[in-house]
Length: 262
Image (tube, rainbow, N blue to C red; front, side):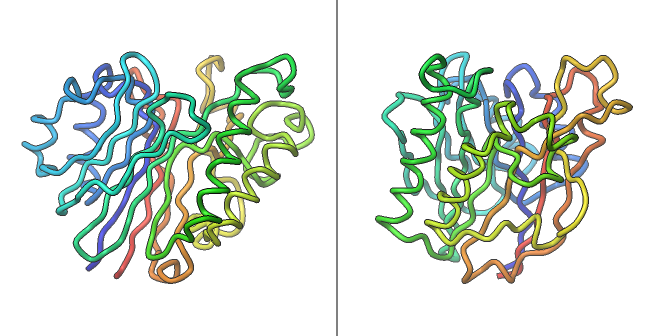
C-alpha cells in the first residue's frame, strides 16, 4: 500500500472550509491530519469532505479551541485519544489503517509568550504535555506508527529564521527543544521530513503579525512528520507547501506532506 499523508494546522476548519476543499482538490492526499480545528466534531463539515472522496474521519473537537481530525480516503478506525497532562484539551487523535499502521495526530500546546513556567501557566502546560507524551511512549513503545502534527517546536537552528534571536522565544528555547528530543527518543521516532530533506530551511509557519510574511520570511518549522524505525525507510517525497500560506485568508501554517510505500 502506498499513500500520501498531509498535516496542516488549519486554524478553524469551519472558517477555512473552502481552503481545505481546495487543498484536497489540488493535492489529493490520501490522508489529511488537521489541527486547531476549533469545532465540535458534529459541526466539522464532514459531508463536504466525503463528497470529495474522504468518507472516513476520526476526530476530537472543542468549541472555539484546539481540536484534531484525520480525514482519509482509506478505511480508518479510531485507535485512541489521549488527554496528556490532564489538560482537558482536544489535542490528540489516533487512527489505524487496514494495513495496521497507526497514525497519531497531535496539537501540542503553543506555550504562551514567556518561557518561564513560574510566571506563565501555558508554558508549564506545554512542558507537562511533552513529558506526558514521553512517558506514554516509554510505557508503550510505538511500532508501525506515524506521528504528525503541530508540535509547536522548531528544534534545529535551521528550523528558524534566526537561531540566536529566537533562543529566548517560545518554540525554540533550549528547554523546549530538549523536551521534544526526549519525547522523540522515547518512541525512537524518526524525523521523516529531515531524513528526506536533511539540509536547509523548511519553515511551515509564518506569523500573521508580519505585513509581508513571504518577503520577510521569518518562519519556523513547527509542523512535523515522524515515523517509527520499522516503517521510516518507506517514507519519501517530503515537502512543505509554502504557497498555501499565501492563499486568501490563510492559516498561518502551511501543509507538510510525505508519502509512504508500505
